Length: 218
Length: 218
DNA sequence: ACCGTAACATACGGTAGCGTACTGAAAGGC
DNA sequence: GCCTTTCAGTACGCTACCGTATGTTACGGT
Image 1 (cartoon, rainbow over the protein chains, first blue to last red):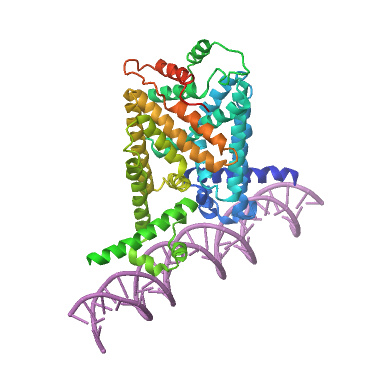
Image 2 (tube, chains in turn red, blue, purple, brown; image 1 turned 45 degrees about the vertical axis):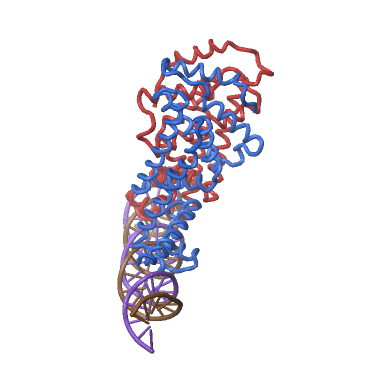
């Protein structure tokens, strides 16, 4: 039993990965047993050994996705001490993976399904929460951090959407780099906006520090 | 014939409206003849008198939606002379109708379908274009207007998305009003960026100038 | 009173996909 | 060498939905 679990869970995970692929390109409805089996070169007989039914596959795929989108994503930037750079990293990550973006949009579109909706809600909440914490680490009070993090999150979700729905209109190449910088400058104020609690830091100095950061661009 | 057309097209439009309702709550897949007929209290026999097939219904619904989302929306704010107020109106409209938001998201999710994708693209392009024009009317040069209007549009699309996917996290009530004002202040610079300095640096000034703007208080 | 037609109903065949029951084959323990 | 376990294939019934063919009703014109 214990050793066979490895083999079984491997194959099951392959099914789940294939399900995620199907979701990314065709939405939740595209996760159908027979087409997936065809794509994997087997028949339903295999599927119903690994999973009790289609719902179980969807659940497994959602679990996989949730891990990818929360734990992995956050672990990836956790070692960045500077909160500003941490947020920049999150933004870059959000604009990097095309598949991840499409997957999010596909799952969000299917959030009427209670199982999907719950996961989407948890993922959104966790990402928003982590963003909010990062904004607080910038020196914002709780309230401002909540507003700004929501603002920033909405913008980047919206970017995915616009990029998919109106690719012709969406900036690309050099223009995207400018667009990206504009968003960073606008959405990550490096000086606390509520005058109350923070030590006044040199705004000019901080802004200049942001510009000579030339790294990749999606 | 001429008088019977009115009756016929009326009924056909009812079908199209019902199709849009179904889309808003269940996506494109929810536009199915038999369930729709049940919901309307008739049978398929009626449907196949008005439309040749399901695709024709989808096309009619899309046409209706496109009119709603472009012409009507723009006509609604066309009489506002102040470009600032015009943009505010557009934003308010975007955040007002829950159904319209869900409809957009549902159709965008189904934009793999070429018929749907084309309409979504046209609607997005037209709205973005109108927004860009409004930003130009604020005094921005073409380039900045393009970046800022894309930015603003993405944010409001993202707001719809977040509002649907993580309703618990999305600001509401008093907090939403603050959130809304923050977005307006940030996304609609009231000081014209003169065409003279189109460099990205000018945008930084913009952000810094937005803060001491005495006109609104959160 | 009669007919034509607009509007809807009924009945049917066809397909896609879900799930089940059963069969088949390879692999490793005994 | 057998036999259980693991994994996959085949065959079938079931449901939802599409589309078609045909039946039924109401009504306006003549």
